[in-house]
Amino acid sequence: MPFQNNVSRREFLKLSALLTGAITVPQVANAVGEKAADNRVKIGYLPITDGAPLLIAHAKKLYEAEGLEADKPVLFRSWSQIAEAFMARQINLVHLLSPITVWARYGSKFPARVTAWNHMAGSALTVALDINSVKDLGGKSVAIPFWYSIHNVVLQKILRKAGLKIITKPKPKLAADETSLIVMSPADMAPALAQKSIAGFIVAEPFNAAAELKGVGKVLRFTGDVWNNHACCVVFQHQQDLDERPEWSQKVVNAIVKAQLWMRDHRPETAAILANDGENKYTPFPKAALERVLIPNAELDAAYLKSGANTHSAWNRARIDFQPYPFPSYTEALIKELRETIVEGDNSFLKTLDPVFAARDLIDERFARVAIEKAGGLSAFGVTGGWSRKELIEA
Image (cartoon, rainbow, N blue to C red; front, side):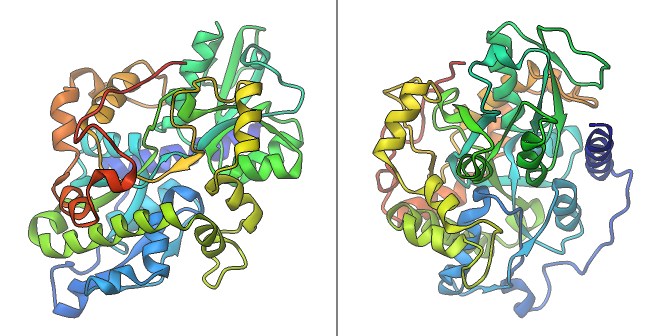
């Protein structure tokens, strides 16, 4: 797929240039201005379930309940687009792939921090119907949404365990023990799978559910079955807002935390709000695809355990779950895993990045802690064990 490869490479290079300052983005007025501007929440998102808490907070007017003004969320089609708008302060609240935030703060010194998690799990490896094992991906290509993504981290762990070699650059012919990774827009993944241009893709929901419902693919493995309760997208906010507008920042996080709590108890309603026939048309997906992701289904759960898409019967097998606290252990483990993950571009910054330091410097947990306590504590989100946990990772 030379066209897709070229598009993917341009997308990665553009974001790389943005994060290293090689592209000058237009600057907008300083957000610490008149009172009306202070209250405005300007949301940017991609049409995936990862951004759901930001969108539900908007739909349920939870920002307004905190005394803020929320603009209609702006939909972006790529990570470079959303990053450019965020850097230009055209938007001040985004969800980003957690590894991108590591790259942004330490690879590029961009002044922003993670203030909460958006969700847990919510991604899967979907393959063609004739693929029955990870080994079957040998000699074939698999699409990922970005090099700096939990999807790339998890996929490479799965492939290595199966004895497959990872290829990241175009190659005329793959050996039987090689799997080529291609960065691809999520919206292009299912069509590429249907056309047999790729053998599989790993991405956020509801793209996996949509492929299942259309009969073009099946889930081979859920990412949450490789890394229990992992974060995927996280809330990213400007350092300046956190330092100079702590009250505003707290109210923003309060709204997101309240949204997650509401979503846990209102999953069918959440699917309806996010669907393409909902009032705000937040995503291009039908309600059925979103319901498949959001609403627990005992029959499907049993089928996934039987097929091997889930293998850990004692782990949390919710297809997607919502818990906002950014556990330091996750960030520590993520940096260690990123060191073992092949990416395009310069990732030398990871060699000297102390995981313990990063878990406390990249993450500004004070707002989430306050908001969670106000919402009833961690137990309200199904979390036991307090403010620390042990990461469970097994490919």
